Length: 317
Image (tube, rainbow, N blue to C red):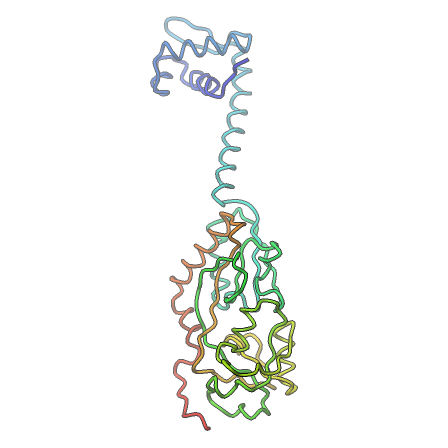
């Protein structure tokens, strides 16, 4: 049996028009060709579907019964094709988003809200990852997309920057540098530091300021598993650490002081995914995030310039 979808669509149009010439015009085909296709369909079905006269075309009882089934089948087929296209384009599905402390900071709710607005049929699952996994779930392939802080050594991860914020030195309120308004990198190269317990060498180099230590011995590094653990170590006077400036807003603590570092590159926040596991939804999430970044310029400016308006005096030697 050669019961093609095309013939079923021809049948449905003739049934609606009740006229072969009008149906043929609607289908952009010759009337003779349409008549032949319907005769072939009747032969394949094994029943007469239309009463034909020189003036009219009417459905037979068999045709009436067949029409209901055909309409249902075509509707299901069209819905299935549309669903497949939407899945392929990333319009439906499930998106798992990994992130570290603060995710994209104050920009996060704007990004998630806009993504949900544009993709209402996508289920979003978000999970926070601690300091040991700076890939935020990309390395073990839990996450489809992640909000991370480069640099990372894993070359399988692609990242697109959202913004860059300053770094601060976090010290105990009793530390000698706690009274400074700002510090320079030279002030802290011999200070014992707490650094996230991560095996990623690029991450460790960046946050331990290793690129500034040419010819110097690395200071004592205390591994930590979370930002809150770091803050408690610092408040107890056991270490200092280098943090993104957002730590001041996300983990305020009366026992520590956050001092801007004036001469180091800032910390970027980026949308990332794996090169070998790219999904349309991950790309769509990045596109939305970049759109929101441009739209919410004032929010981004506040993140990137948290000390704007603060007048620092010269640091004491």
